Image (cartoon, rainbow, N blue to C red; front, top):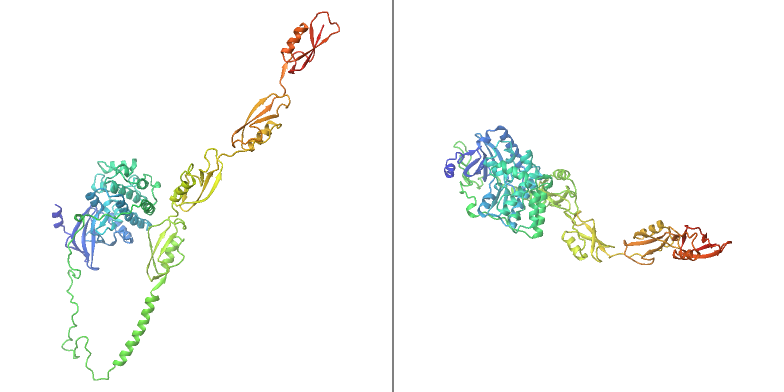
Length: 638
């Protein structure tokens, strides 16, 4: 059926707009058919993409397609299929593009299956470079997928269909149609949910495509496009290593970063993603070659008509002599290159002298032109300027700016010009390559505590950071000569090339206990706290130290315990007193025994009426009063 369609295709053999001779059918897609043609004006092979009739009949779609085609034609990059022209012939709207002999990435993966990690990264490098150039020019592809990535036999990669995706975005396509089913896999959630797309939407599609190249499968499957898009909006793209062993964690991280459902959490554009890809590839030495398509997949066409054939034009004979004059012309005709016969004096010496003079002048002029005249100078102060300022300066110098993939820079702020090539002299009207700065590469500073300074320094070196200095600090928890922490703290985003201070343990700090005996409790507590101790308090009776005054500390003054340890102070309660027993009317011997048993010293004294046998009374101190042990109790007996 396909062969019958090709043989009966009414466009094959047609001349579009009197310029493009359609020679062969190449491919049929959901939105357009592609043909091989010859541009008779420039005598080159081109690919002509003709919109399907149901799209070409929609005037709004055609107008949008024409605007987007003109925008895409301004995009010039070696990894982008160039758009040469756009036109309409007999109601057929078409786009004229660079002809790329080879196969698309979908056909290669269908034939080979999953690519190796180095191969996948090599392909994506070119895809991201193309998208980065588009994003820098304010263009969004909107339909990044393997079908739009072309690979040639000599390992070149070309991204196609810039602008066409947006042109058909307004058309109605059911969720079960093959067009949307083919695109839905790579559609970012915000495109499905809100109908909006920006550079981050292209980044999402690139991440899904990298997943597919690594695993040979798409992240999600469903029976229809709506179900597939719903799943992509509610589930995260899994790491490729869950389906294909051997994918490095860094590549897993690149895929999950690019395919985050929240566009704010993705790389801001293809340039930022490309910078990370290059960094990962260089660090892990994952340099590979773009896989060439198998011979059976490579696009093959016949040589067609000769380059000098001009269908419909007159035959031109090169080198024929001019025709003789008419019969009425009496001037003798001479073959070209033969001087006519004359009877006048020859002027040859004069002519020769004039020719020599002119030749000398032209030679000098040519020498000046090739040495200096055809050159101008690239403005020398572009690095560090804004993109708008650099564009203005280059255009004012009669040159053309070309913005390449942004790069990280250790010296130039984000968004300003980081590099200019060439510098110095350049031919008039030449192109100046410029790159904007992505700023310094940043890494999350890891926790280095517990490592030796040597190991910690190596970890920082691996992250392209420097040890600015080493500061030794006391630590009650980290052993001596091990890293306590860093400045900045771990978890901080730190730019490459930054200095990081290592805080290294000196071990536990010991502090001398100050003298606190005889101080008030408040003053003693303050003195010990100032020395770095934690203070505990205990109370004791003392017959020699007033109440509220510190008796002693433990550890004692002069000791050197660890800083932060606990020092106990003993605070006096004063003299310990006891109740004097009441021994009234007791016999003297009995009273003396009671007083002694209570810890006091009895002292009997005879009363004036002693001997009448009435017992004793306490003369002093009074009975039931509180007295220290050992106090003399005077007993008066009768």
